[in-house]
Length: 388
Image 1 (cartoon, one colour):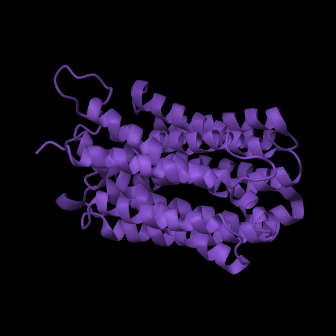
Image 2: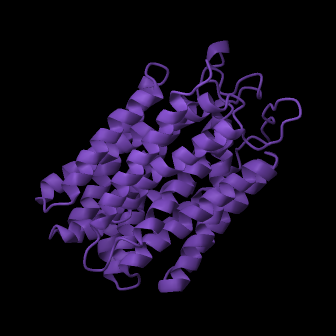
């Protein structure tokens, strides 16, 4: 967080440099916004085991929360000026805590409603973090920092879910833990910068991204939807392989540990390797991992499979921002990268609803493979038609 000209947190042309405290607060509210997403496979699996959600409703619950996050993040980026950030961050954190607590004891449609409300509050918090990242000189580096720290936080919570909270208090214990953490998140919101400088636009341009930027966002949605579809069905896939919920929860927290390593690796590679190389390499590894989940695996190999998939998942995320900036140098599309990832994370589970049953959920693996290949094709179309 040096203040040297080459390492300002925020480029002078977009806004003044942030102090370390302000930058940390921006990252912290983003962590608060995504904690529930990291442990959702364990939480939704526990709700299904308690017969509070069906297999189809697992996908719907994930879709509702992520879609609400995506819509709100995108909407805030389009219509809300980035000012009064401390007040907005504190109110969103409080609203998230209330929504998580209200979901305790609920099931079915009621639970879907409360997860949607939680997602809306999470979307506001994520908008603040994305707004900071989009204004930096090296967005892939700051995206990597954000991904690494938020995944490390998810890892701690996932371990607590696996070894203590879910086993002792069930799904409601998990919801109570999320509510408590969200309430603590009010504190960093109080240290946010008061406002961000507006992004530059070309003369006569609106705040909406240009066509190539929109195409890049669409490609991001398709690519991310593949992993989102598989991720929420982790516990049912474990049961399909005749493994217990404990194995699935172990696979989740160990996958999150691998994600921390993946995000750290991506941060170190920032500026040294092209995004397209990363996307192709990780796509090939993803396909191998998903093929493994389609057959019965011993517990240790199931865990390793998910660890590898987790590592490559966080290799992809930080490189989405430079990909979108390459398509739209004005960075207006980059303001929507968080929303695009969330919409993709919601679209995957929604489409999975049509290919899974309570008896067999492996159809989600074929769906994910098709979405991944389609997303890579769209990215390649942009990459090889780039303006010289």
